[in-house]
Length: 190
Length: 87
Image (tube, each protein chain N blue to C red):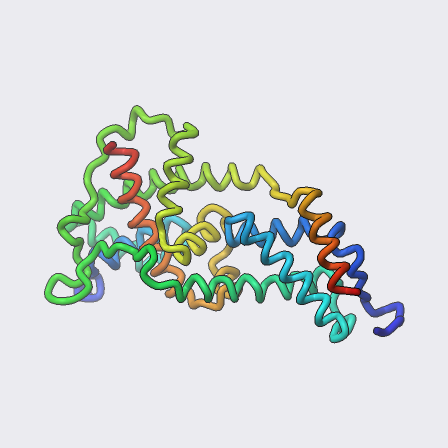
């Protein structure tokens, strides 16, 4: 590795103290599971160590590690994207025929009867939301959380997960219609 | 003109979801409001969707307030593993 002053250098002995929390926070805001996030951080450090000899010193150490972690997050997204059938998203609209795009009769939204007297700030409401999000297929939950709870920009999510904007909106739409229904059954009209 | 304005419930609710993030175009909003004239269901969906957005906003606020870290035990374990790999 070059000793050139202008170039950045790597110091793996200090990685954990300096970057573990930053990388962990980065990962957990995307995958929303601390065990998975820890695994991704670990893999990032290992991969970093393995390819340390290829480090050219062009980027700062942290930037370089984040770039590795980004690839780990994409790999994770691809993996959950190919997990078919586990928690299949329920369709809300006719997919073809004369009624294409119309509400399926059994999925038509109902009026909510007790939204007024349920405290919007309550802890129960928060856990009801969490439960409904957990019922979504993982891919939908991940994109929905990044967009709605972490409030990432659309462009950023698309870039990070390598999906198109229209792809993102289909996922958000399906996630939101499914969540609305879940909250209708388990909270508002319970 | 009329044909362009006509959209399905699936499309209408997609626009509605987009507009929750302020990302629907003006034309899409016109399409949506035109759809409301003929569809009470989607009109209700939109009202409920705004309610849901308030709940999500609250979750987002919660989330921003807490910064998540790894425990020192986990970090020490990771350090050992890294050192073994280095050796």
